[in-house]
Each structure stands twice: as structure tokens, then as C-alpha cells.
Picture 1 (cartoon, helix red, strand yellow):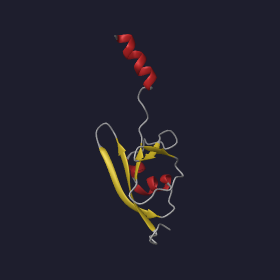
Picture 2: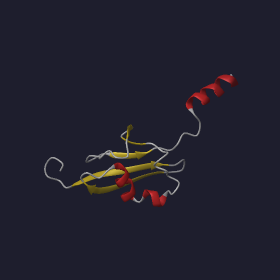
Picture 3: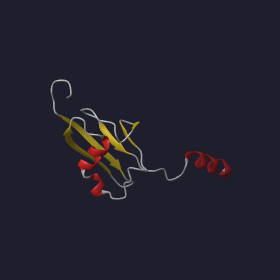
Length: 97
């Protein structure tokens, strides 16, 4: 249990597309993993193209594994795949100069 005896954890799940940003607030049982929290949020139904096996996840910009257990107040972020590898983007910019 969390300090103070709370049996649930208040968190947010965030996901952005090019058009919009969605933040879903929910309360999950203590010990819930990031993967379980994302599933409980319903965001996978809203955005069926999300593939948690390919896309990274994190908490406040820090990468986390799907089995990480979030704490009260955490914002779980689902990261979109990169459109272009950063190294390749730099090479293309350099060639065009």
C-alpha cells in the first residue's frame, strides 16, 4: 500500500497525435502496472493504432517499462514512433545545405 494506507493510485494517461492531445485521469489499484493502467484508461480503444510493443512509454518524460507501477500523481505518456531516425534527418539536412 501507498504511505497513508491508500489502496488506489490517482494517475493520468497521456497520448498525442498530430491533431490532438488526450489526457485521461483515472484511479487504479496500488500495484497496477503501466500496461494495465493504459488498458484500464480505454485509450487503446480510442486509438487502436497504438502498439505498446513498438511504442515507448514513460512517466514525466522518463522512459519506463510496461511492468513499472506508477505512483499517485504520475502522468503515463505513450510515445509515438519516430517518423524519421534523428541521424538520418541530420544527414538529409546536411546534404541539402
